[in-house]
Image (cartoon, rainbow, N blue to C red; front, side, top):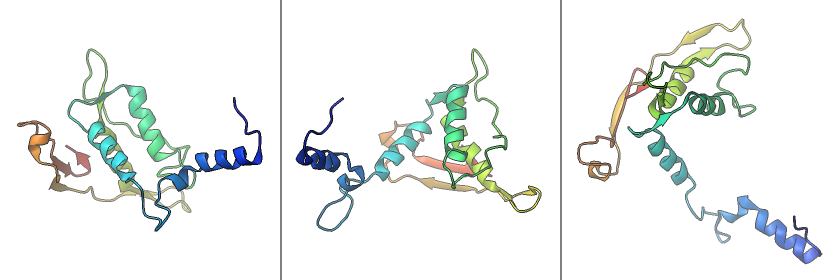
Length: 156
């Protein structure tokens, strides 16, 4: 472990560890690089046709999205997270990344009045079809990964 030995060293360490300031251009405050690209890449990799998750991975992603951010919880921490059945049952249970997104969409559909006795109502599920800006050939000729289809809240 290294500790700064002088005021100059301490100031340099503070500058190096100021992560919020390292992603903006000092002249106008615009982003140096788009951090949103990381989210888009993660979404593409998560929802790919060849992405399969173990039970603990599926549950961990759902918990992180639904409960783990204080003040931004989608559900309360004492409520149960409703899981989808696995896409593959044998030789071991596996879930797809699309099921993670679908489960999140299903939880977002539920509304509850926190002041009353947890009366829940379901909003209608969203349905839409869109194409990505990336050409379909980038994913493979017959892969159809460039299509985003959501039917009644399920990412297909």
